[in-house]
Length: 104
Image 1 (cartoon, helix red, strand yellow):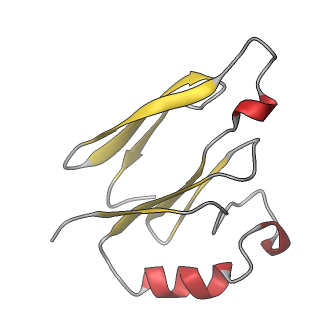
Image 2: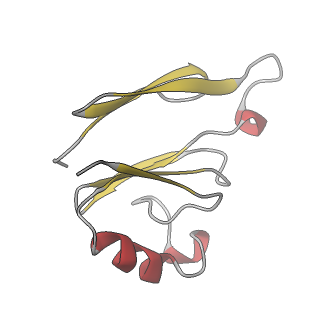
């Protein structure tokens, strides 16, 4: 009955990316994830400009990287987990988001 967060280096989904820019077996991994109703979010990196999408009720967050920040900038943040949502508070180039569970 608990929510699951997945962490990977390469993104599994982003509406702004073609399948060739995702992990090689992204479709198969998403099919496996979709077979469970406990997955709330999948965090990834690698694509430094970041990205976000919701697919079948699962939030896919690609975190922005420091390499796309201005020379004096940064990209990091904190994640707070609540019973009904996840709140990402971004610092510098990292986008802040509120991810509600159970909806798109």
